[in-house]
Amino acid sequence: MTMQKPPARTPVVPASAASGPSGPSGAIRRAPAPAGTLTRVAGPTDTIRLNKRMAERGLCSRREADDWIAKGWVKVNGQVATMGLQVKPSDRIEVDKKAEGQQATQVTILLNKPIGYVSGQAEDGHEPAVTLFTAQNRWRDDNARFFFHPSQLRGLAPAGRLDIDSVGLLVLTQDGRVARQLIGEDSVMEKEYLVRVSYLGTGEPLRGADERPGALRTIHENDPVTTNVQGVFPPAMLARLRHGLSLDGQPLKPAQVDWQNPEQLRFVLTEGKKRQIRRMCELVGLKVVGLKRVRIGHVMLGNLPLGQWRYLAPHERF
Image 1: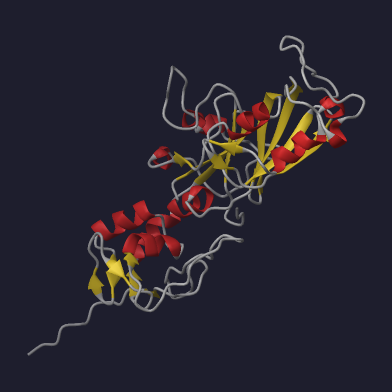
Image 2 (image 1 turned 90 degrees about the horizontal axis):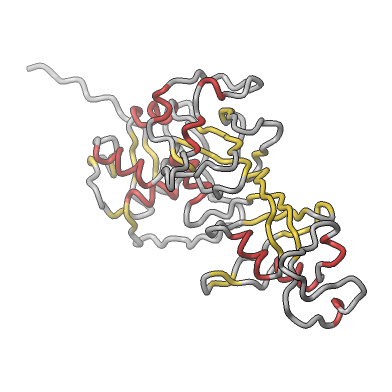
């Protein structure tokens, strides 16, 4: 009687494993939750869908988890997982090395999007920003050790949006972990914008600190203030931009808003409603003349030329 050789063991990731990239053993470990995120501590008997648990652990996105589960690459407590499986914090999650290998080939692209391109699918005759991802448009100063290949277009999707009439940093990624970090439901990622504005007035009475020489209430719509806007814009309206406005019936989160120069504001937001900055400005009598995103998390637009792209380098973190 011959003894069969036992199958090779796959990396084991307990549902409560520590965070970080893959270790020497090849096990995929979870990433930490974004700074400032409030998370509920699960009890020992609480259950959650497997794909959500994997996403919370930073292993992958939910969509990617579903793909791995469908391919039989995920086991829970030694058993091949099925779609929709509920797991407890104490359950052991095993991920096949094939999944780790697949993630290693995924790329994230940083693009300086020009005006006239939409972030996602083509609409109203405007091309999607992903069409700029060509070998010819790669920034010549990009020193990341990646080589462009058409296969990198497969599954490449924007992690967030940037309006058609805005320019600046747009992230396109194949990596579900990056997408979740930037646009996941619990994301608190900072996004920084430089916003050139003109002032049309608020049509509201000025009170208190705003009753000062130069503060304006109503301006003819065909003759807005376009120079030294800071000098005539009421401080109370700047305070409302920082906190106190609502959009779509929901109060906005606090924002950092300061004058960069007399015609340009600097916004730092941790949320991204559709055309949020433009709509915020309209509520306080400002009109956005130009908008440029210059930072997402710790990643800066820097000197990346308009219409060109570069790879997110392995050492860079949002």
